[in-house]
Image (cartoon, rainbow, N blue to C red; front, top):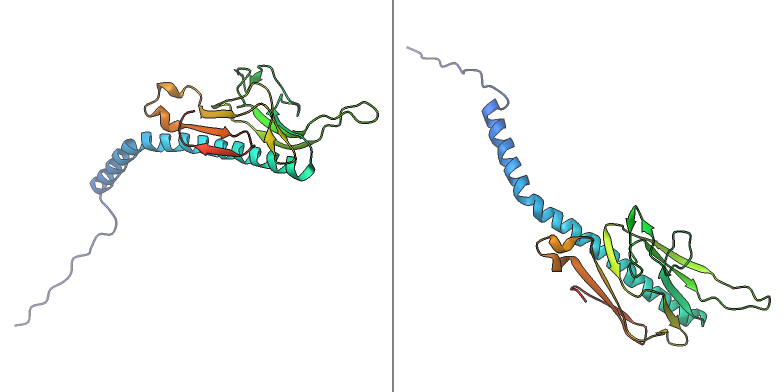
Length: 191
């Protein structure tokens, strides 16, 4: 006697219960990682702006040495000119020492033969209205021959606007210190 077995057809795909279990597990993982991911994005924004400001100071110093003239780094008034007053930045009123609206690098005005100011815009950096960059109320001047700054040491602190209410708020601050010789360095902490 010969016995034959027939295979039952194997169903392809997933059952509804299997899909619901996988989706609920993915939702729990996403809910657990969302705060850490938000903190990482905030820290990344601060780091990007801190490195942009640091490179702007290094550029201004090198241009002062290369050109043999004073180079100013100052807050942008929104029209490519230096500003010393508080102004609105993306519907947010900023203080007189907040550089978050943007900043620019330009040659120091020199009186030429006709008596007009000879200002040349070298670089502009757009701001981030979600950040606070506190520093000098006026401009930072780099002078030749070695790129020193006028006025002694300077410091700029970069952070998230309203971050004091956040947990681990100190991790969201960076400090740029400019020595009297004009060299700038970044510290991953508050000033």
